[in-house]
Image 1: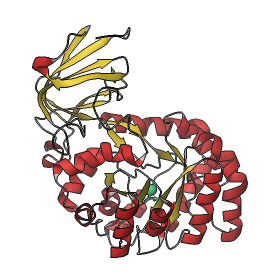
Image 2 (image 1 turned 180 degrees about the horizontal axis):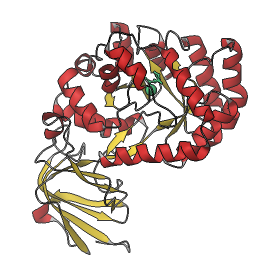
Image 3 (image 1 turned 135 degrees about the vertical axis):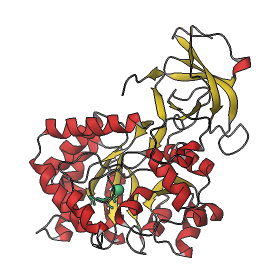
Image 4 (image 1 turned 60 degrees about the horizontal axis):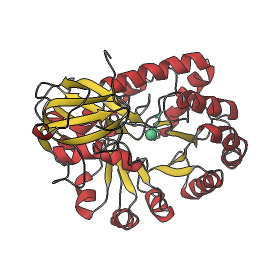
Length: 392
Ligand code: NIG
Ligand code: FE
């Protein structure tokens, strides 16, 4: 291979998911494959028998390899947990957006060091399960100081940081005054640490007009928009995301035919978060309806202490297949290339020359096992940016 970076040929790949549109099928599968990694990037992909020479070789013994998962939606900066609230839900209580305020109080009381070490633990938990790219939102600070420091903490772990000051109106605050704060001083303090801006557009949180105001202010500050919408009820959030041409709108549990048409026409990705429906006992989003209508779909964890405290993309893939009628191939694609597209990224989620060498090695012969063997820790090795992560 050319170039000065050390090259490694990964061999013994029984089944390789490339997601390369230049190859056949949704997953661009290659059997008996090899991947040549040069520095942090993929240099070559194809049948092992045709692999070029490299400085070193690493054999995965016939295992399947998929691109590292791209988790495009998480809320990892928080303190405390809400296990009691979860237990109450499992015996009949409904999920409500108001629970967010419990986590806000705990997060405000935590030090930067406590928040950082908690995020580090969760990021490692994710990596162990094959996640190599992740987005992290703020949203449990809800003050100028606490939103800015939440994002500063998140930035230590990922470039894909999202300002979610508009998560819920803090107790005792006038909603209009709070929107002014979010779009004013809070945005100014948060913007240096954020790439995205998000709003929880839902009954009990922010309406579509407020969401439009917040997204417009974010755009003026250079932040790209995304939305939490149609999680708990039908509403205008998904249509707003489509109208604004946002790259992704997340949850999409309650959708009218007009919403589905709007998503198809705008190309906005519907990011489905099946761990939320698992953990709130809500009906799952109808992924089949979206896919059959030609809407692009991503799957993410939504890891957060309230509505869904899983960090596991394999678990979300299994739920998507079993509960949302996605095929295993559709679910794996949505959790890798889909998540990448939902973050506007083309350098991850796909294994092809030039992309980042992020690999999840499965202790299984095919990607189907991710759904076929739910709850089993199948990820036996993870490479990020061309390097094995070692013992996780
Ligand atoms: O994505 N929906 C809004 N925000 C989170 C839940 C936050 C919480 O309950 O703490 C979500 O589900
Ligand atoms: Fe969320």
